[in-house]
Image (cartoon, rainbow, N blue to C red; front, side, top):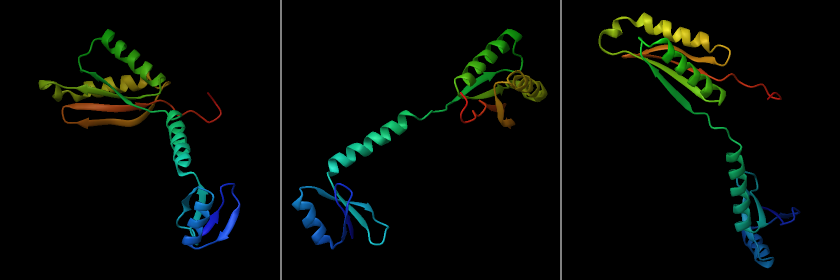
Amino acid sequence: MRLISADGKQLGILSIESALFEAEKVFLDLVEISPKANPPVCKLMDYGKFRYQQGKKVHSARKNQKIISLKEIKIRPKIEEHDFQFKLRNATRFLKEGNKVKVIVMFSGRQITHKESGISLLKNFIESLKDLSILEHPIKDEGRSLFIILAPPKKEKGKK
């Protein structure tokens, strides 16, 4: 195996026994860095400190992630104009926060025979939010409901 010292200097290619002896001599652990290399690469280091630093890297990577969630808005085909505007404002707020929005038109009873009213409602929703969103999933029929998924527009790198 190829052995690297704690300060990053290469100590050469050694057997496992001699590498373990070197680790004991400087009171450090022998940690395998690259097992798939030929020969495998090991480094002399404090394993507890190494694990702590790896955990910090993972934590900082998670902290910088943006979690996008899917918000649902349910409407009926005979929705009043004020209620429609209220749902539209909620969808606008969700999109500005960076979340995706799933708009569902739910039919009950015999309303299912008039799917065109639900389709026109969804098209109206898409048209009202065309400046704030992109249509990620077109109108889909799912049993007793129709739905679409709207996503916030992708931001170009370098712009805020």
